Image 1 (cartoon, each protein chain N blue to C red):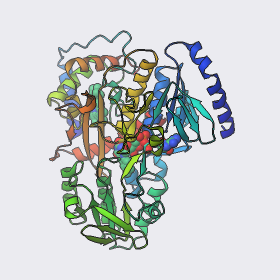
Image 2: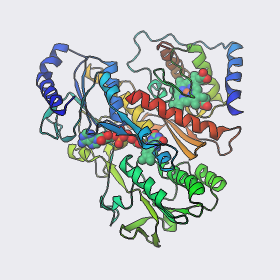
Image 3: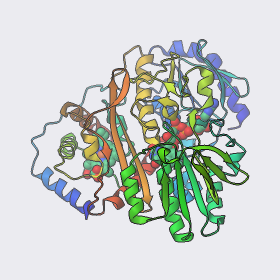
Image 4: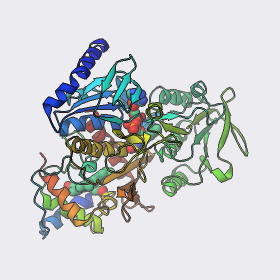
Length: 106
Length: 420
Ligand SMILES: Cc1cc2nc3c(=O)[nH]c(=O)nc-3n(C[C@H](O)[C@H](O)[C@H](O)COP(=O)(O)OP(=O)(O)OC[C@H]3O[C@@H](n4cnc5c(N)ncnc54)[C@H](O)[C@@H]3O)c2cc1C
């Protein structure tokens, strides 16, 4: 099934150890996050809410978020919508967004 | 809180505000937000979250907001209208003062707004998010009285319930006629999601009935995905008449439920007329709407290009490549709130990136989407090339079912962020 494929594959690739290095969180990052970050929370809940099929990303390890975004962007990992979204961001922008989410409370 | 007490509090706040603002120093100030929809409610609470010292007043006449996304599912009996309703308790808990009234006038020079009772509120920055109003003169015969016979159901609430009742009361075999307006309008894929879900419901409850969709356009959002879905799920049930095939409605007769086009006339058993639209009326009064009826803004803080100090968000604004959607309204509001905090502190806001995604249901368990990523480019909010697009035409392994689940998750997530 489409859905089962994804987390399994993703986990395997993450375990394989990505060489990606995430940027340091900006000391006092621009209010509201780096460009693009505030749009992510339309789907990835900023607070804990019951009952969402879309995983939260706040408080996740920055390098994991970076890996997901790059793999979605290249199409290496299948996705329903993230591939189309990730293609709008370059490496630096992804690093900044990942660092910002990593610094948010889980 | 009673309305009276509320006004007294507002009056006092407004009178004290200048002294308070100077005492607070740089970084604080007064922001008034007009309209508590996806754009306005998001802007108000984000402002407060980013800069708690701000005095933020949200002016909205309705005590309960009725959300349009997923209201097409109410028509198809897949949801109840109560699931579309959200109060302002969460917004109040976030520290926003909610004034349950409407703004009747904006004085851009004097930086103040007049409320329905004559009270005034002063501001340092004004955010206008009044959504849409209908152009009641665009289709001869279609006025507010006609909408009681031929509902638009394009502002969710009583109109949604009326259209659902009419569908349920219709005889099996009756013809449903919808009309869709030319661009731009609220929710570009919305009429086609509605046609899909009405067909879904007809197939079960009124199997002899068909739907005719008269369109003032030759192309529409996610067109191939919708049309493939219709052919697959509802063969022969939905007939789409494009502009060049005579789809533009030139007048209606509510007494006989007749829609007239240049090529003929269509008598409906149930008629759903989605009329042409423009920014909510207060935008024109404030001087932020141009001759198109919509509000031009710059692409970084969404400040009006016609009236400095006023930011316009959501459906009311001309947002370059971004469509008029709840997702976009929420995304714009978060960017605008951050930009206003910077501007009030005397700093230059960063160039933003925004995402939009519109999910649509072709059936209860059949979802499709269109996405875009946007940034300022030559003074406009433009698509970032290479990003975005629609769901694939060929779906593998349960993708449509999964997107239907993601659509519902999106709605729960965004309404929790805005109203929760
Ligand atoms: C059938 C349908 C389905 C849709 N489905 C989707 C979907 O699946 N996904 C999606 O993203 N979008 C969807 N939309 C679009 C979405 O509903 C709108 O884009 C969104 O509501 C825009 O938000 P807004 O805040 O700009 O305006 P609104 O939500 O209309 O809010 C405007 C608010 O301003 C208030 N107001 C107006 N004038 C004044 C005044 N003078 N003083 C004070 N307050 C005032 C109004 O009372 C209202 O509460 C759909 C729309 C429809 C009709």
